[in-house]
Amino acid sequence: MTTRARATVTVTGHATRSPRRRGYGELTRDEVVGAALRLTRRTGLANLSMRQLAAELGSPSMNAYYYVRNKDELLDLVGDAVLGEVDLPPTDLAWDRWIAELFQNGRTVLLGYPGVAEHLLRRVEGFPNEARLYQAISDVLKDAGFDTSVSDRTQRVMAYLLFGAVTSELATTAAAGEPATMVFGDDDDVFRFGLDLMIDGLKSRSGRRVGRPTPRASS
Amino acid sequence: MTTRARATVTVTGHATRSPRRRGYGELTRDEVVGAALRLTRRTGLANLSMRQLAAELGSPSMNAYYYVRNKDELLDLVGDAVLGEVDLPPTDLAWDRWIAELFQNGRTVLLGYPGVAEHLLRRVEGFPNEARLYQAISDVLKDAGFDTSVSDRTQRVMAYLLFGAVTSELATTAAAGEPATMVFGDDDDVFRFGLDLMIDGLKSRSGRRVGRPTPRASS
DNA sequence: ACCTGAACACCGTTCAAGT
DNA sequence: ACCTGAACACCGTTCAAGT
Image (tube, rainbow over all chains, first blue to last red; front, side, top):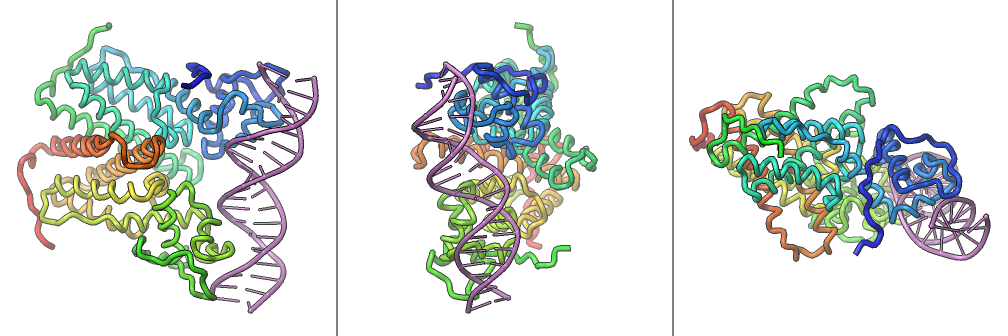
């Protein structure tokens, strides 16, 4: 039913242009999302307003609405673009290490965009980069011998852990003076612990495949 | 440093009074929180404004600010009051069943107050009802033979799962027409699955105590 | 001690009007 | 096709002024 095609925004994020004033017709949907990404990195999604976005675009008013139906759609695009920055671990890893690494990559990326994890918790639709990640997880878990019901539930449950952890971590570090001065290197620890708990739980399911390395083929 | 004592709000939630106009000096901090709880049940924390709160209190303007420093403090009180509605499972359960039941209780309660799980993700301070829950979890895990480093991390990680799951579930059911008509009885399934994964992971830690029922004493 | 109501500086969104 | 700027209906918060 969506008329306007949903472009696979692959904005480079930090690389895009600065607040310089635009001429007529020089703006694109990707630049709007790019500006939103920059703003999110700097001040967090919670402090991103359509008016600040206009300022970041060098536009005197609300023409971003020409490229985006409403703010929520913009945030969806931002969220999916951020997911696009999450690298897939090398395919020759054993499934348990692959999963752990993927979600740790996800955490690192999301910590750089305050508020995005929180938004992703409320918006799960089928955006392209999200679909890419979920497909990859499915493949890996299937190769590891888990059936789709296990793999579907695993990815949802790990996403809850990831988004929940990042949201909470960002909130508490922000509450105690912005700089990374905090004692919290143990946030990493806690997240890793949660991941391990789930992975160990998976291993104890479908009994075998506990110690076996199971390196997967390249195709 | 906090001058005004933080009362252990134990508001009954659904039982408190309706929008009738108040006289002079009839308002209390607990009634403010009670009104906020009612509003949250009905329309969610996201749609709770200080002006609507005033209306719910039958007050023509912003006198709620006399009882609450700002909106965030109000939301903290609401959050902790909601946690106060979570019942502790009977102490004669084995630790793994106790944990599972507690978090399922938590999920049920939080699903009744849209937005509260999301708020709790950003605010972890030492409120009384939250402290009660965390203390209870610590005790149970300690009795089960886990050391404090495991138990501390476990409760954080399970809280992430709980708050993340509830936030996501509420968002997707809200996105598809409010009534509980959805096919999602499997939200329960997914959450239970995540809980089991973590509990199984715990069991595979400190090797033994896998099958043993370990009923705990009454003190 | 508690309550009022107007004010300030913001929001998201819409829309006639411009080029 | 794209951009503007004012307008609408909201926000959270503050504060002089009332009782």
